[in-house]
Amino acid sequence: MDLVEAIKSRKSLRGYKPTPVAKEVLTEILDIAIRSPSGLNSQPWEFTVLGGKVLDDLKQALQEQFLAKIEPHPDFPLQPLTGVYRKRQIELAVALFQVMGIARKDTEKRDQWTLKMLRVFDAPNAIIVSMDEEVSSYLAMFSLGLVTQTIALAAVNFGLGTCIQRVLVDSPEIVRRIAGIPESKKLAIGIAIGYPDWDFPANKIQSVREPLANLVTWRGM
Ligand SMILES: Cc1cc2nc3c(=O)[nH]c(=O)nc-3n(C[C@H](O)[C@H](O)[C@H](O)COP(=O)(O)O)c2cc1C
Image (cartoon, rainbow, N blue to C red):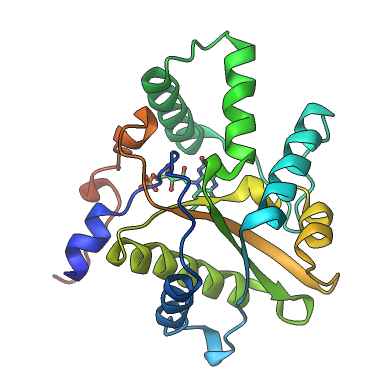
């Protein structure tokens, strides 16, 4: 598949077919993705690939956390968005809720959406991207971002969809327990992966981008 086509066609998918992704395909995707660059070639990334009962158990436990009103407590603290960044966050939420028929004040439907998100959008597989606490620095997090995007792009080549999901690591001790990840590993992000359900309304969304002209400064040219 053409690289530009893959980059342009990748988008976060939030509805999947139940068909599990073959281990061989997931292996190939990760094998491609580890060609990503990393600071000092430290290759700080580690992957825990989930499916079957383990993923079902995780989906269940994450939903229970939400229903018990446990606040997110990720390994890497969250910072609420403000200003233009918050505006973009809201724009996305409005677009998603509109296409999903969720009214702003309909707390029940909003909760249902959060539960679906915590069920990894009902994807058959998920990848938890982690790093050893020994390397959990700026360089490592940057490098994990690169490998995560490369996974998402490689997945497109195999007809797969992904959604990079912070919420999957909001209760890291639960993920570590169910997925058998040692205490010494810091969880950076989760990725939903599976065959897209193109009929799912949220998958029709194309997220907006700020025009390049507002983002780039040219000097000396
Ligand atoms: C670090 C990171 C965390 C994200 N966490 C979530 C999440 O928890 N739930 C979700 O629905 N989407 C999540 N996303 C997906 C973003 O909402 C999405 O990438 C963004 O809106 C741009 O849309 P696109 O991926 O379709 O181009 C995350 C993306 C990134 C890069």
